[in-house]
Structures are given as structure tokens and as C-alpha cells.
Length: 161
Image (cartoon, one colour):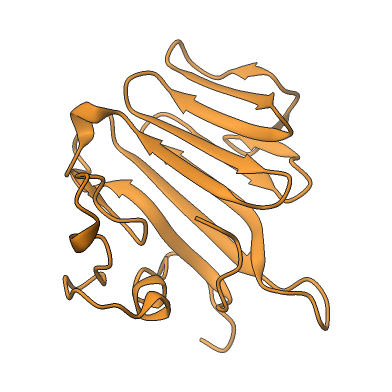
């Protein structure tokens, strides 16, 4: 997903719908315009797991569980964070790989065994693009802004609210 969405705030890009699963994850992009004429872009990327939280800002400074870390970092036996091809790659074995490039593009790759079990603005990862443009309340639409806007991460503060 590109960081050129015309909205400000934090948006849930992808998550495992079953919050009780040990493979649960959640990817939230905090979108901001950091200048008068600058476009909205991913300012900070948050990746939540049951046992860790990884935050990466647009300069690729990285925190794990609130502590600044040097990369590469092996967080757990299954979770690592590293720099690869000018991108920060957050990878959990047999679950998810999240890449945050220097151009502020976010890519989420989900293991095949989790196909169709995902929620978020990036779709459900079931290899059927016809049902990916779904709002948080389950409506299919062709309006990309409506999809993104509906997946606002309500646990992050928003301006004016």
C-alpha cells in the first residue's frame, strides 16, 4: 500500500481477524503531512504482535516495546527486524512480513495458511481482489478513500476529536 492516501490519522492496514490466535498481528500506519505543501505519507508504522510492538518512523528509527533498537534486531525466536534494500523489514515466521521502504511505501505479505483470515484496509488476502475493497462494516465499494477512512485506528488520537 502506498503512502499517498489523502487522509490524516492512523489507519489499520491489516490484522489477523482472530484476536485470540497466537499468530495475531496488527499493522497500523500513522499518516501525516509534515509540511505545508507536503503530501500525506506514512509518518510512523506500528506493527503489533501478542508479545511485542514494533514502531518505525519515516527515518527508519525503530523501537521495540518502547525501546529504541539498532538493526538488525532479533526480538524473539520468531520475530526479527532488519534493514534490507533500504527498507525496514519486520518478519514473524509463518505469519506476516511487513516492509516499510525509504519512500514510505508499506507492503504487507501474509503467509498462505492465514489466507482469508485477515481484516483491514488492505483486504483479506484470499486471492480474490473482488472482495478486497471492503469497509470496516463489511460493505464492498469502489471508493478507495471510503475503504481507508473506515479503517481508522480508533485507539490512536485524531485531530479535532
